[in-house]
Image (cartoon, rainbow, N blue to C red; front, side, top):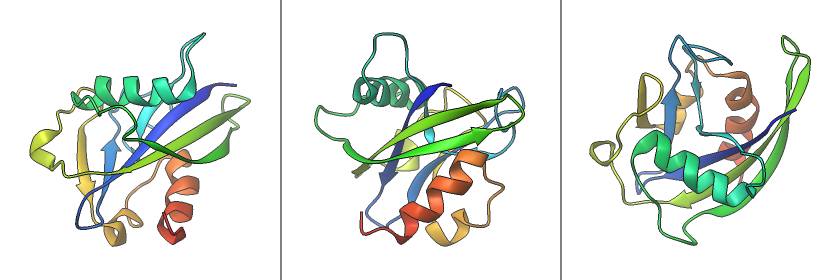
Length: 136
């Protein structure tokens, strides 16, 4: 079982920052998911969310920018594990031009209506619909 810290940034249009995974990804290659990754030994979840976001996007979010949203168990039957995703959210004024893609094919803001139609990673297939119907 892995602990995963993931981030939803929402821009002023209500579009959500999502990542298209590369073909070399261990889980769900070539699918769309959230920005984030595994929590390192001894690291707290919130710190991991900030670190993973910076590593993958080149953007260092200011302290207290992220708010905890929800936790999701994600079954990974091919690996025989259940990973726990802790999801953080934040509004942002960032645009696609501010985001660098350091992991995967691309990291861009996606219209929520279009996001539902993407080929989603298992984790995003569980988390995204819950996020879109939430009041967050």
